[in-house]
Image (cartoon, rainbow, N blue to C red; front, side, top):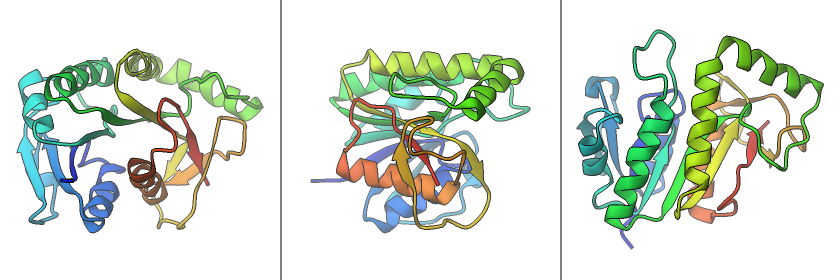
Length: 213
């Protein structure tokens, strides 16, 4: 089977190690980016499309001819994109997936997005409280995007991550829920490794795992 992934967020701090890892695993990638020169990778299996996830036609072009979709988009400080970036972008993704018969979706969000399996400890509740104060709009957008995905007919996985570290990957991660078999940090490289593993193994379809060190 042709293994072609539509990847959104390729130029971000998770997207960079993720697309390299997927290429090493033999996947082909169609990646939508606003600024193509932000991607320095050159590979026969990597197709860079210039555009914006907030434009339905750009999303449609990216998803056409693919087998699965991975979204690691998120809000960037100082960016003037829509405060509903994740929700609006996800809405376009789901519509294009339906039109092109693509079923598999993996989307990344933060650990402050709640899930029924969570058993948050004091530190977790504190983090969520801080997020609701200093990043109220981004948190609301993340929650709305998760609700949108959960209501879809796709084979979805919503990956939740803690504080992410700019350091070399440790080569290990653990999967649990907030407050259950979890810590409060993870490297970007190890997060990318989990996403790639979940794409191949599908252990958490219709679930919202929390991945940490």
